[in-house]
Image (cartoon, rainbow, N blue to C red; front, side, top):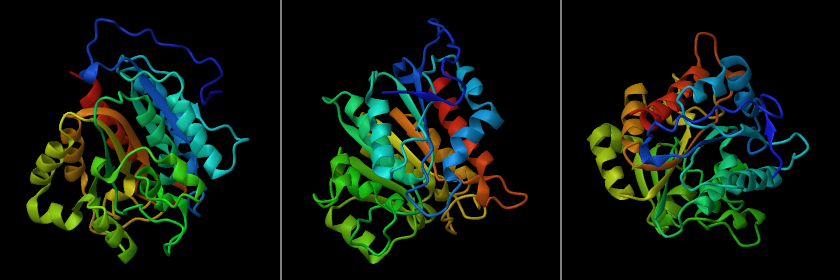
Length: 309
């Protein structure tokens, strides 16, 4: 797989300090800049990986954790069709995958998960359970028969093998409904509800979080995850709309920072193998707000938990 790096064709490599011990015995950090916007109709979301690297010194900060960092892979400009972009992400992650690595994906819209999740799954230990945590305001379980026909609302459908076989995205199937849990969902239509109920998909609605408390909800989430290899997909719109105007589809009554801290801190007690943070769009930002900064808070909260003793 050809690799394209935001910081040059041959970025300097940091030698790993072999004396450092990392949670979950991570061997390296694989960075993926999923510069995708074609899954929805609001341009700008694909610019986030580049903004983080060029303006926020992202890769240098990541390297300061001391874990070996692989090249920052981004999608080449000549790959323009969404299916091909997702396939590129899948193949880039799977290529030379070390099952002991930690993958960090920066989006991009949520359609990127069609490729990133199968890429991680294919590289993990097939003899151990794998579970996917979807932190999001939306269910993202639509298909082409539902009302909303943008692909960023469909990755869960494809990943769980629910997409019709004549849909080319059906080939991204890699998990099943019992492997999956939602956290923070609050915008569901009848199509979503019916499919989630039909397949008995585990879901912790935002109403449940407010009623029971985030700590109690996360206890149940951790019981569900057990000792599985865990993939986390975190959409910035899981946060309350007042905190993240710079995203395509902000929703009211979402999580605050304290909710996010508990979610992240508790998830990091499990065997996390991949984290993706998606749907940050700086072009939609409002004056006085910083959705990008909130995204960085989420990213570094994960890394502080996973890469610091």
